Image (cartoon, rainbow, N blue to C red):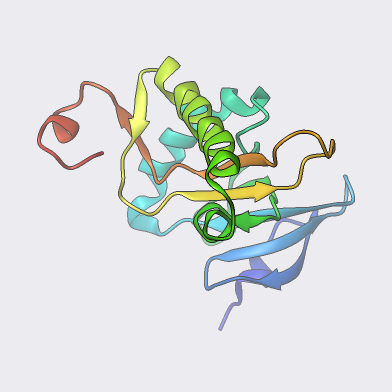
Length: 166
């Protein structure tokens, strides 16, 4: 049986398995820890199109950067993105006062606006992955990082009007 780690491109070394299709890898060329996700064959083409559309948003500091889109030897699509280590937004918010929570949640609105500027909205087909990371400046609020918007869809699409999106 072929393992996922045996199918990785040469430049990536598996560091930790987070699930059957998600790995933390080390990029040997950049000496950087990254997140590598393998897409299910039935979703690969659609998600790859979504990723290609949003890849240009990488300049926004609230969004995790998509670094590579590729295909494994077995034909499955994968993507590599920046590894964002931090606390889940919802867990983080439970232990904070309202002013802190509002400051970080406002960053989420700005992150989602990046997608809106491209005419996209979250699809809502899977939970968003949102992390809170400490600020480099102790006088600034923590930083929000949107790792995965849960899929995206065109604002005016039929699916959205039919109530299948957010």
